[in-house]
Length: 415
Figure: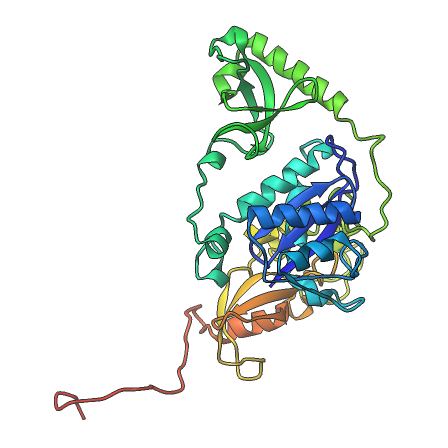
């Protein structure tokens, strides 16, 4: 099953794009930035997806007007290609949850990069994040990458090994590029341009704010930056790009409740899901480590001691993510080995619940994956209870089994 949805950007890009169509099966994701989400562009994105990946046997979307209705170009193209199109019920976002979960993750990653990158480059950034996520092995795919699972091909990551998004580079243009210093120019690396040029051809942002494709590209090295003339050129380049890509006059009206790539979110500033800072002391003055009210004038624990929220990235520092434990008999699917995969999010990709120093008062929700491949949602305090119940007083893990299946013994057995 494939799913399709639209995500708004919040800022008009340098290429005049205002959002992107997202196709996903929950692991493999393609994004197509467009100038709008009208019927014609929705139809073109479907055609591109069929050409790039293949015709999906089944495709599901919400009841947005660009997807829904027998008269839409999108529906006609899907039927002509033999694709069975279905729709989610109104207000039932859970019925297209796989694509919403992927959008939430792409939105988080893109938003974090845009903290140091001009927002008008969001479309290049979104495409880069979607492409690189296809190369990451997933537990639910038994350690395979999404690209291998969908296409059957081992991914070739050579084009993405040398540079990272928005790296400062030298590029050498011309019919016969000259590699000397006199014929090089500064630029920013924006990704791989698969439809232009040969292999190893990249999108490069120039000093004038144009985006070109070049295959002769080199890193700006540390030794380069130590040269006074080069550092002066870099400063001039950064200033010119900053002025050219100023987004003051390119903000778009937000009609989707904050569900955009570039919005300032209304979550607490310390929420780790968006890579923000740890909480200030004032944010800890309501409760002590046991969950009891604390007078604002009393001293409180240092933020470093409250290790359940003192991390910058939930995917890396969250102490529960990646943990494996055996569900107890009182839990759904009791007895199954579960792995904590990620934070559970709402329809807009915002993490559910709040962290607390006392596990009993921690209201965060997580998605867990069972050995069977099923996923479920579980509260943080349930995870803590299961983990602590499987440790002895010295922190050693102990497990129990119910029975031995399919065994035999011979005369050498004792007893």
